[in-house]
Image 1 (cartoon, rainbow, N blue to C red):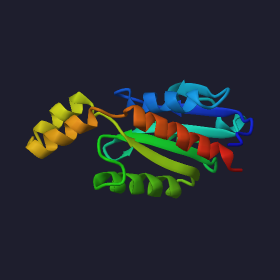
Image 2 (cartoon, rainbow, N blue to C red):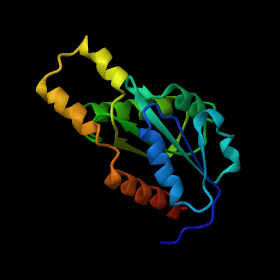
Image 3 (cartoon, rainbow, N blue to C red):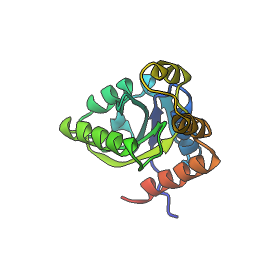
Length: 168
């Protein structure tokens, strides 16, 4: 794999640590990558590629990530995120489409967008108990999400990130 030398920023916002773990995995395989929380993220103009990670916040990109992305319209970011659901299934498809539409409407292009499953914030689980019955199926999904991101997810994130750098 031909990995051209580039200035790469990996920035993220994380509540439960899921997105941070994916960001760390990505930064670990990119020589010289700079990793920082999104609250401290510099202007993307100084970088050849910028990976922006966020968590699913009520069906949207997290507030800080959304603000960072929208404050730099026209910059082609590489997006990644985490959510409690299984990527590519059910609600996660709705979430991904919503994020894509919101960013397109704000003139925020992106080169790629990928999601990984992650544990659900325990405070959110407690809050949702009042609104949704904790059926055996729901409890099973919550328990399954708690095992992610796992080693396979992190390796997959690394492979995906390197693929984003081998193109033009």
